[in-house]
Image 1 (tube, rainbow, N blue to C red):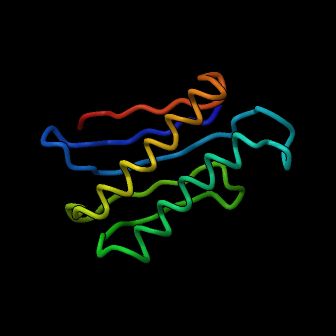
Image 2 (cartoon, rainbow, N blue to C red):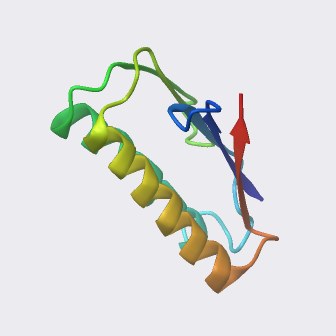
Length: 109
């Protein structure tokens, strides 16, 4: 299962997100759920980098099974919108394919 953890402050500011694990929906190279989750998460990272002034650190595993982003400053409106869109996309994938392949949670820190 792939697990995505999004961390927010009590005031609602995003702090970080982490995506880890493989969905196990199908064999490697044929796993459409894993490909969809990866596309959403990586596109969010790329958009945060290219389309916003957001400051963050990024760590990832070479095999693609783990990616972590941590904001080093309060994210602006565009960055918040992009993370909201990521969550929305993950929600739809989970609704379509089920919690046994993808789970996400939003934690208050």
